[in-house]
Length: 153
Length: 149
Image (cartoon, rainbow over all chains, first blue to last red):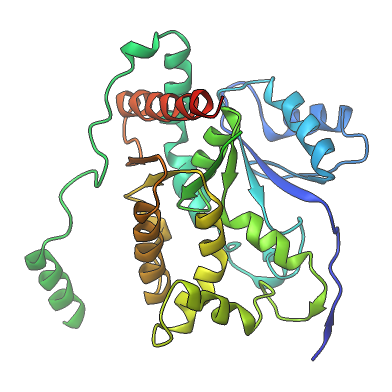
């Protein structure tokens, strides 16, 4: 068995997604570099990947979030940017995990609208959530059989 | 600060919302990061070792496929550590092979069996639903802060 020597031990990597009419990933990257102080920043098509010691990354994210708080979204990432096990430059095709981001980024404008709206509302005026289990009726057996039959033909 | 388990555990929206309102999101990235930053034997791509399916035995029986047990070795400790949970029920993108599908069912079951506050939602499909979605999450998370204080 081969020995495994990890890189960037002790660091955290965070994705910063931007879906704003006013800010591009490039603007975000420029602002991030201004306050980076050693944090590694990678600009991507959707925003940034930021890698560094936890407190430095938190400080940087707190700073860039202020640019457009309701249109900038942040999440943790397990791998550092460019890791050969995940980077599509090595694997070809979309990066694993891309499809989840693609799906959620398609809905993020509703979340941004929600964030904008609740800032102007009192807590008791928040509308009730209509669906908690499934958004609509599930796939019934008859439709499933029709799909299977169509596939077999 | 309350540790909030999020499902889907890779959700950008939930991870951001929990962080935004001052709590700690417990998602898959934390477990993956821990594994890939620990030296040992090379076991790409996720540094999952043969020990992980054994750890998964805590959550699923031995006849359950090792894929489920391996995944539970990641998710199980997070569920045990969590003090609250937010679940999105129509996360179609998290559907995958039988290992993923059964793990998803088991994760939801284990969360519901724990005596912790749980918020169940579906993804917003319109602006009106977006307001309700964000409002429900904010109310839930600020309620946790008041409970913890």
